[in-house]
Length: 186
Image (tube, rainbow, N blue to C red; front, side, top):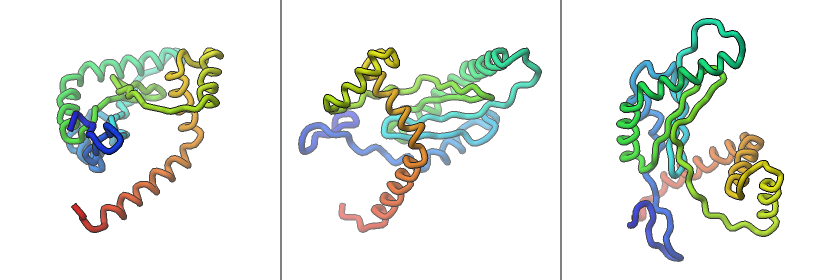
C-alpha cells in the first residue's frame, strides 16, 4: 500500500477509503454548540469532506447591499479566526477517521465563503473535439487554462443537471445498500 493507492492489475489504483456515511452524525456530535444556527451542510467525496454552517444573522441596518455584503464577509472572517485552532483539531480527528481532508466554510445572508478547500488533480483522456471545447473557452477568455475550462464546464453541468445528478446518486446509494446486504465472500 502506498498512501491511498495500491498496486493492482493495470498499475496503481486508488484504494478504498473508509465510509463516511456517518459523517453528518459524527460532526453533529463533535462540533461545539453555538457555532452554527442549525446543522451544517456536509458534502463528502473520495478526497474531501466540506462542512459549511450558517452563522447567526447580523443585527442592524446597512446603507446598501454592498455594505451588508462587507459586514457578512467580515463576520465570516471573524468566525474563521476565532475558531481556527478548534477547527484544525476537529479536522485532524475527522481526517484520521474518514481518510479524507476536511475543509470548512460559513455562510451568512447572501455570502458564502469556503476556507482552504482541496483542489484535486483529475486524470482525463479527452478526444480532440473535447479539447477544442476547452480551447474555445480559453481563447474566449472564459478560462485561463484547459484545467480551469474543465472545472468551469463541470460546474456548469452541475448547475443544470442537479436533479438528474441527485437521482443518480440516490440510485447508486441503493445499489450500495443492496451490495452490503449480500454475503461476505472475504
